[in-house]
Length: 124
Image 1 (cartoon, one colour):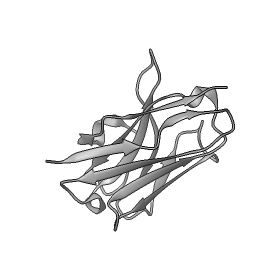
Image 2: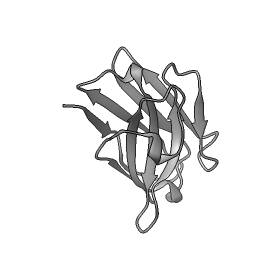
Image 3: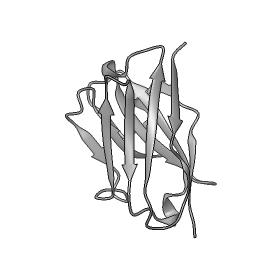
Image 4: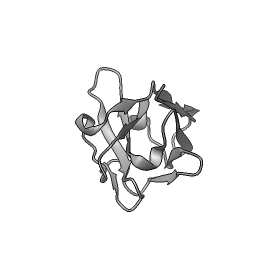
């Protein structure tokens, strides 16, 4: 069974850091581009960051650019999103998704498999 599992979310104070992980089971991530998305209460799901199959292309939405780093460890079948200088507006459920495209995208429609999400809450 193909499955993506996110972890690493939690409650963090403004200015803090978190590293989110996206682990795959039932398939190998190195055949997929991976995206990270988030959804705040009452808002649409938005693309945060993504990484292509080889890691050669990455994208970040403007609000996290310079504060976040996406990386992949194909040997561990895991993709990471390091988020620093967190702000209350980063709060939401974070999802990872896998798509067969070589290059990644911040559009939800190009992804075939989705995880269940991990909650990130930035609050003092």
